[in-house]
Length: 152
Image (cartoon, rainbow, N blue to C red):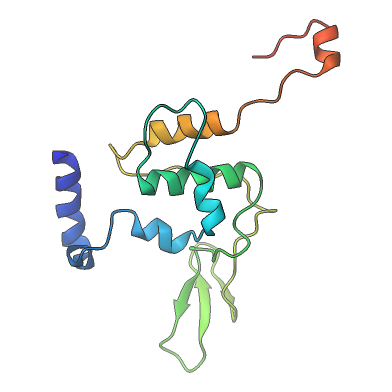
């Protein structure tokens, strides 16, 4: 608990709006929008004998969708920055030096997987375990069983 308090105090220096009562993890929730049904993917994971915090549920739900190649069709690409100080509104990607007149969205088809990069102590391990338990491997096929092939 003391680490989380320290992390919050450091965040208040960089992001004073946190003092106004916004919850931890609001940056991810604003960048990665999930429907109510998608958010419920991590509500009950068979075999996970602990309760996930809301931001952990959000992360696990997002990872489940990413592994399935779904979930980002309505999410804007966070690499594109809005430029409003000129006459025309446009979006700029500093990593590729590209410009667009429309705000680009992420494509689930072109980008599967992701990076779980929460701060230290926020439960990345339990989120990874939750993902593994929520997405177990398929049982061996009959041909694998007949051929004596072992999985794992």
